[in-house]
Image (cartoon, rainbow, N blue to C red; front, side, top):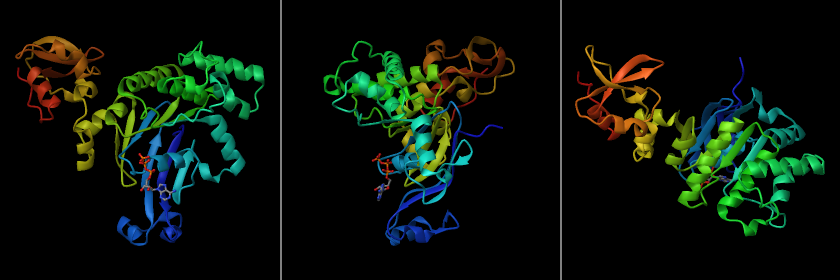
Length: 344
Ligand SMILES: Nc1ncnc2c1ncn2[C@@H]1O[C@H](COP(=O)(O)OP(=O)(O)OP(=O)(O)O)[C@@H](O)[C@H]1O
């Protein structure tokens, strides 16, 4: 069986002079109150998760909830105080320092909120930079950089300097640069937070487009649930260093595990997140369907079809009827009410 690309086993990261005192046999041995009393911050604690190959895994939470610290542990930048981070089944922090550098350089790519482009290098040189660090020849570097620049839609701007680009364009350069080294694992830490909403959506579409082509394993941090819902396969919601729940956007909206998750997902655009499968009811025995809806279709895509108040629609998967939807049941789910059964 293949391993998850990344996994956390009881990961904790503590800050404070007395932090080590609370780790026994590699495990965190104190609750939040005891740690706080000792002046120790548990930036991350009790984190268990698995990220599968090809998945877009989003880590979200408010400021200070531990997202960046967790990602620093996942990407090998910071060793956890307790627990283990497994990369392809092996403890990331049991590699030697130089092996870890090689893994980070060749198998991981990073994009940050602040574009961190080198101001004195032009677009081509910025994108080629990680390949220089990898020791590739100039011809190889430039060929790859040109390919990446084209991929993110910046062909023709190779000679510009960062200061001559808009925020969105700078972030495209950051994306091209992080992809130049062909990482398997791509970390994006609030990459679009500094961009205005329209450009932000455009960049989310860009990630979806690139992911459709490149099929990377993506770890994406955001504090915006709408952004998470648009791009994620799985979302982990963090609070006070802990993961409150992990699930698809649909699972988090429909079955929040805690009040915190419920509050986080309350304003979510349900029509764009929920699928027919999740909102259907058992089909009445004698139902005569006015039409059929694919089980994977989102409400926003089929709502216009469910127009008449008394018509019942069948929900199908590969030609098989799984359940039924009518207008009232759909509206119940959209406004967050327990849906009533579908009328025959
Ligand atoms: N080097 C450090 N030393 C001490 N405390 C730290 C350190 N790094 C992070 N913390 C604390 O750990 C907690 C989690 O911080 P972290 O930066 O991981 O949160 P975050 O969710 O990424 O926040 P933001 O969205 O604001 O970046 C915070 O209380 C922070 O003050």
